[in-house]
Amino acid sequence: MNRESHSEDSLSTMVLENIKNKLIDAFRTSGESREDPAGTVRARRVSISRNREANEELRRAQIDGAITWLRSELLEMRSQDLQLAQTLLGLNSEIQRLRRESFGGLEDAGDYRQ
Image (cartoon, rainbow, N blue to C red; front, side, top):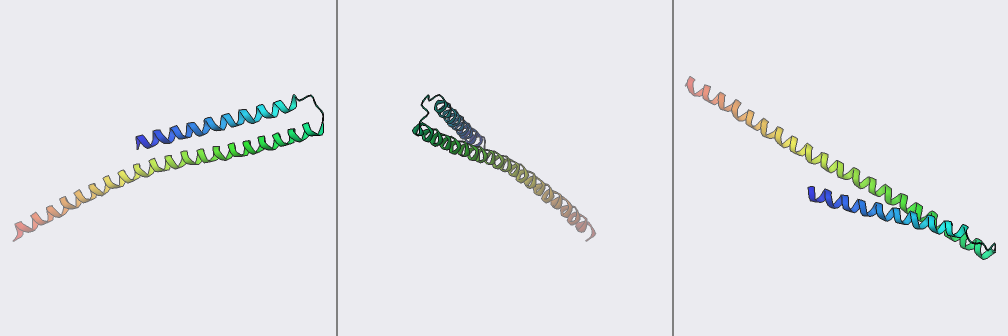
C-alpha cells in the first residue's frame, strides 16, 4: 500500500507539473500576441487562434486538475476501506473467540452434571 501511495503521489505531482507548464506556455503565447505591433487582419487571426489554444489548454488543465482530485479522493477511500476491513476482521476474530469461550464454558458445565 505504501508503494502504491508513493507511485500515485509521484503521478499526481507529474500531472500537476504538466498542468503548470501548459498554463505557463498558454499565457506566454497569449502575451506574445499582444506585443505584436502589426494591426493587420492576419495578426488578429493569429491572436484569436492563440486565444482559442490558450482556452483549450486551460480547459484541459482544469480537467487534469479534476482528475487528479478524483484520484486523490479514490486513494483516500481505498485507505479507509482497508482500515475498515482490518477493523471488521478484528471484530470477527473477537466474536469467534468469545463464542469459543462461551460454548467451551457450557460444555464444561454439562460434563459436571452427567
